[in-house]
Image (cartoon, rainbow over all chains, first blue to last red; front, side, top):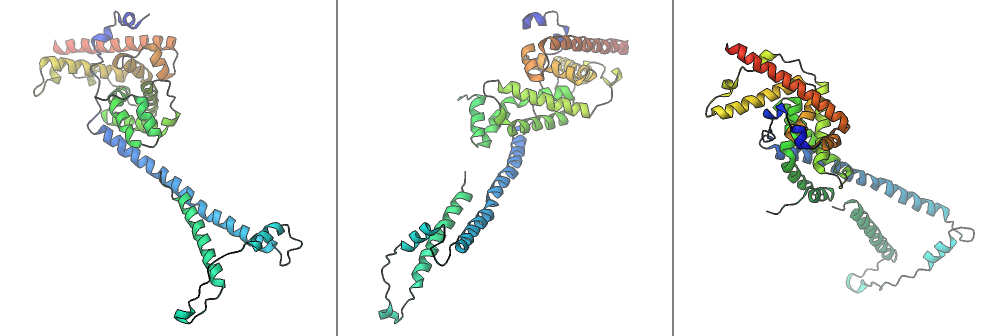
Length: 138
Length: 191
């Protein structure tokens, strides 16, 4: 039975016409969109804060690993499992131009400063990488 | 005019452009609102329910299967939202005396006699709709106002095709009886 046949002798058709549909009130779309914006905002904030909340955990893990490796790597290198890594690090030779400002300031910079600068550079790169991961915008 | 289908905007929404949803709302708002209104019988509630339905659709847009019709999927949300709202908030039964006597009650301002007659018939249908149960209201709405086939109604409501035909037949009979009674009352009132 098709639709036309179903409508045949349908007295209710005299009263109901599809043209007589109730229209949505003025501003309906903007009201829905305002609710959509409100609805999506907490989700976006939650997603961002969920990512941000991971930062302390990652930092803790990195710190624990560093502390553990400092404890596990013994003073004498003979009986440690981390010997190959340790010796590799030990064998890294830095070639940094010697800074001699004595002629200007009549000062001699302690050699440890070179390692401090390199450490700071590595840490800032690490910080930059973490920032890039957790503050990435869509 | 550059016409883009629902699927285009749905893909935009999924890609993160929430503003694309306004095109979807614009396109379907009248039919969604009409369905909600015919089932709940109140303009304020219908607006709230239609808005709720759009919000639900937005939240679960990722679960929409692109192969089926978006309109059918949306109507299913509107139908279920409105039916459950009406079931929770059951209203008192209207008596025949609650209905205005005839079309002259709808004449006012610049309304012509013909328009008043149309308004009267529309009010009569709304009145009769409120006298049948919410499920039947939904079926009548989808069948007569949205002009859906029984197969499409089955997709929206989850009721089998044969059952829809039976329920529609009963709902139609009930509404005609109510309309007849009101019309009879009208003549008694005028005598």
